[in-house]
Image (cartoon, rainbow, N blue to C red):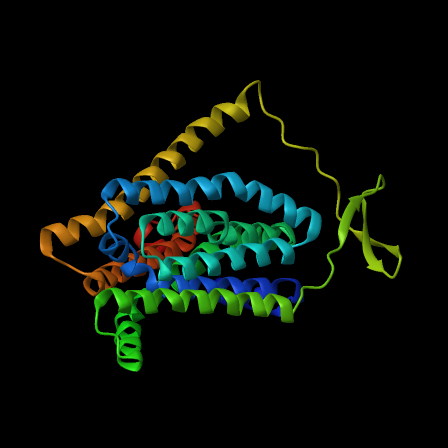
Length: 320
C-alpha cells in the first residue's frame, strides 16, 4: 500500500510527474543494456585496470558533481539540471556504442560520470524536499526500491539482443552489443523530450515568520504574492553533547563508504570471474544479475514492515 501511495504521489503532483517519468525511462534504458557493458568493454580491449578506472571515473564524477547539481536544483529548479544530466547520459551511451578505441570509452565514461550517475540522487532530493516530513522516509526508501525494480529490466536483454540482431541483420557479437547500447541513448533523449514538453510548475519558496507561520511566495507576473499558511509550531533544533554528532557521523560514514567500495569492486570483478571461470557471456550474466536484483528488491520491500513489527515487539517472522 505504501508503494502504491508513493507512485500516486509522484504521478499525481505536477511538480514531480515529468522529472520522475524521465528518471524511470532513462533508468529502464540503462538496465536493458547493463548486463553486456563489461563484456563489450573487454571485447574492445579494456583490461581489468581499465575497467577499474572506468568505475572510478563514474563514482568520482558523481561524488564531485552531485553537490553542484543539488545547488542547481535549489537555484533554478529541477528541470535545467536534470536536462543537462539526461543529455550527457544520452551522449555518453551514443559515444560508447560508437567507440572503436579505448580513448573513446574513457571519454564516454567521463560523460556518464558527469551526467547519468547523479540523476537518482537529484530527483530523490528534490521530491523529498518538497514532500511533507511525514512522508520523507517513504520517499527515500520507496525511490530506492523503484530503482531496484527498474533494474529488473535487465532480464529482457537477451530478447532485445536477439530482436535487434534479427531486425538489422547483425552478425557479429560486437555489432549486436553496439545496437543494444544505442537503445539507451533513445531512452535518455526520450526523457529529455518529456522534460521539455511538460515543464514542472514554478516552485513555492518558503520562509518562516516570527509568529510561527509560513509565508509562501508564488511568482505572478513581475512580483511575488505572499500567501500565509500554517507551518505548525516551530521546533527547536535537537541538542547533543559536545562532539555527539561527529561521533555518530564518522562511524556511519566509514561503514557506508566501505560497503559502497566493496559493492563497486564486486560489480566490476564478478563478470570477469564468470567469463574466465565458466566462459559465461552477457546472456547468462543477465539472468544471474536479475536474480540478485529481484532478491534485493524483495528484501528492501519487506524491510519497512519488519522494522515496524520489531519496534512493536513482534518476532521477525511475525513482522514479515
